[in-house]
Length: 123
Image (cartoon, rainbow, N blue to C red; front, side):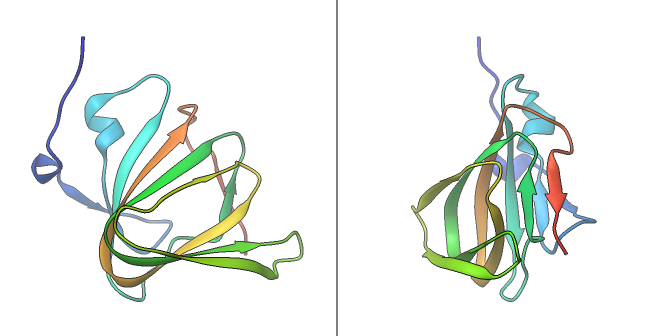
């Protein structure tokens, strides 16, 4: 058994907690063990600085260019990765990160397990 959807058929929704818009793949397909979505960003937009309570996250850059920044417990930057189409990064739940858009693009993000509202925003 399987479910299928084409990204072009999914409505683009505004997001209230971060810049960018989202194509709610998970809402459409309703997987039980993961939480997939496609985030659409314009240059200069970024996600919140956050970590997850229990979700490991996979980021796959579909288009554009992004910078993923990691932070220590004091909020200081520890590393920054430049991400381009085809790059895939897996981040552990406890790693504080922020995704910034350098060039308009889309990122396919999968969180597992499928835990609703698992993200913790860091100021």
